[in-house]
Structure formats: C-alpha cells, structure tokens
Image (cartoon, rainbow, N blue to C red; front, side, top):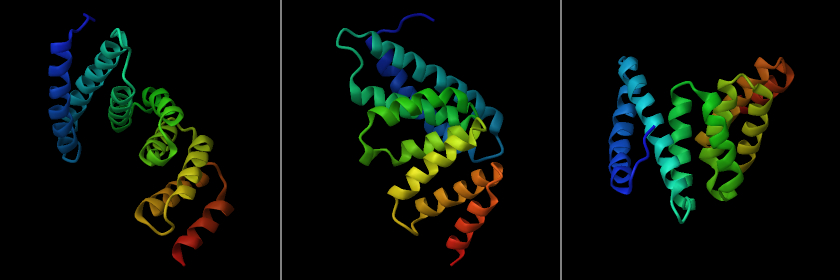
Length: 168
C-alpha cells in the first residue's frame, strides 16, 4: 500500500464518516452485499489511517488511536470478522479508562462470541453486567448474552438461574 499524506488522511477520515453512515443504513436492509463491500473499504481506510497516524513524528495521539481502533473493531465485528477485531478491543480494554469502557467491553464480548471463545465471552459479559445498572437495557442484554454463552458451554444450571432472575 502506498503511504498517505496529511491531506489524504483528512479526506479519508471524512470519507470514512460518510461510508460508515451508509454502511449502518445498508446493514439493516436486505442489501448485505453492498454493506459488506463498504465494510471492506472501511476496514482498509481505518487500517491505513492507523498506519499513517502511527508514522507521524509526534506518534499516534491517544484520542486518535482510541477513535480509530473503536471504529475499526466495530466494523470488523459487524462484518463477522471477530478474529480481526479482538486485538483492537484488547488494546482498548487495556488503554481506555474503566468508566468509559462499557461499549468496548460489549464489543470484546461479542468478538469472543464471534470466534466461539465462549468462556472468555462469559467472563467479559459478567464483568460488564456487574458495572451496569441492574434492570437497565444494557444489563438485560448482558444477561441474555450470558445465558446464551453459558448454554453453549453446557452450563445449564447457571443459565437457568440467571433466566429465573430475569423472569422475576
């Protein structure tokens, strides 16, 4: 791949914003093939932007790296490329303050599910559930994923116990 300059980086960032908006719209319709093609381009753009910013004399600025890794990991997860998103989510978990990490933990748990690493997914869903308001939508989502993962692992007693808690 050819190196990019600052003007092209700015243009790619602008383009990525537009493409991601289109990707999100298309991903909720029957036009998955177009969404998938856009996703491949977004994946490439975010990879190139991470590479570009990392080569700058000042190094990759923390906020820029966090934003790019979040977007890249999210797109990769939504495209079913969970194995590619895992390193980005793991970096984010290690580098983003805990109070800002709920969406990152959710993405990591989904990435683990997408790679059939259910034991790791359970650990992350449990960690996320503990940090959420009991009964809230995000807490309920974490519980449903926990039940699913536990059932995949054959941990039926744990999943039934949690299901009963949800039904009370």
